[in-house]
Image (cartoon, rainbow, N blue to C red; front, side, top):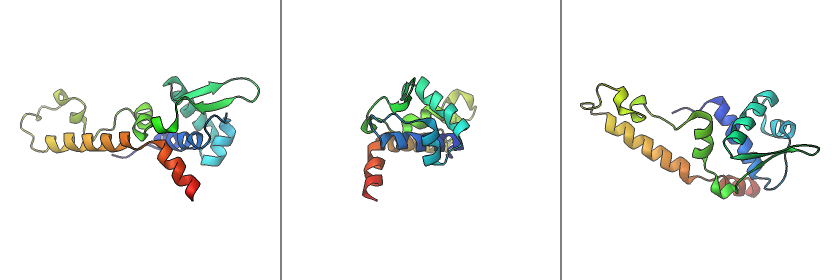
Length: 136
């Protein structure tokens, strides 16, 4: 599994917002602080907003905040919004797409790996990374 640049940028932006609970943050500042191109970040933030992870605040002093506490947002949540569920192989999404699934000895490994990766990503909450950042 390899995440896309878009997902990396989304993870950076959510982590940035997680460090500033309740603070309304403008795209310009998020982009500068996270080293993400502003135009690309604006599109990513729109996706996160449509998915209900980020809240948009309009008007003077407007910007973005997280809709939920960092302790309730996992790495998996962000990855799934941007890329969909992480797949090790297409057969793990839909076994019917593979004609070999009934006799493939490797298929159970892919399924197991997908479950383990999902569990790990779901267990890691952004609150962990906020604490790590403050300690550094």
